[in-house]
Length: 489
Image 1: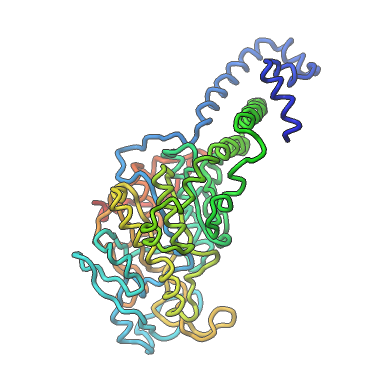
Image 2: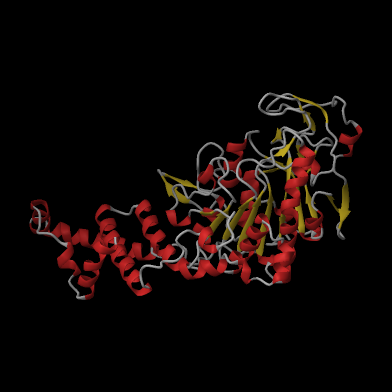
């Protein structure tokens, strides 16, 4: 590329780029310019308007005002992929302990046949002035009980991981739609033009449905989530090719300017093309990230006490990076615990949940306290939870699914999540499942309602944050969703 671009750069510097780029007119070009002069004048006006629009699009992540005053300015989504068990974490069910090992008096349709009642192997206790009941799995998070708003009445559509991932992340379990983070950056832009507005971290690979969880779909490509493999600690490995050791910055800038000019001319001749616009923006963002990202992803610049507070582990490091990104103006950060479905405890639920909770509890607890100490929690929305919950009954051994019968199956009829900061009530519980934990029965909250509430906290009427595509106006909540006003502070 260097050998090709170099001569054109010198022509640009001499003011002769047009001569180098235009070949002699073709017959079609001659007819257009000569025989259709008036039409060309009209076309020139259209192109000029498109160029004006292109100049507006040239900074798609520029900060934008929401519909009304927001309570939250940024979001960090701690996604417990695989389906953490609500009856073992946030929704204590004494009746399960009473009926443990016995056939339950009521049952519910599940993905597979399940067995007797399965009492939680974890102890629950009350925390904070609010007396919020949280299991022993999360002692560090429990220290911030009075900042948590627990929704115990979540429900989704189906008991399968892939469509439930897409529903939670994109608002549609059937087709890959723009992710929640893409909608947020589309609506708000970013406060830092040198970093992506939407960043996703997952160590060692990608989860089920991969990039569909953070894609921009029909939104312009600049709003797509930027995936980071957070298993690495060095910024140069976290973000490949973050430095250019072969070309001086001023020469690299000249190359990108020329490339942008060529792409813009190509775009004007062929109409606005979102894929081409995304390509142009990716070059620009990569160039700007060379200085900013090295600093943002380098947790060694944090004081030792802060690193120890988060825990010097893979999950601890990525949560600390998440806080550093939020601090630098990134609008939406999503953190996955591992690839696949780590919380999918069809077998050995006790050891599975203890191990995973030990990985994430300390870093998340540290994040809540750190954000609060820095004065960021009040305008940062923290979201915690999985794509569904788990059954109150034990999994029956099934080839390829469960071998020892000490786990729980998927349960989309009722599960729990918590929010913190960003305008939600702290130390508050909203809704309830039935006395066994099967179904959300009181103040039920669908995923669409959750999305409508998140957008409301960010200053948007979810029915008005739309994008026209294929002849209709799309939105994150599709044609559904009600703001859960009872949880707003």
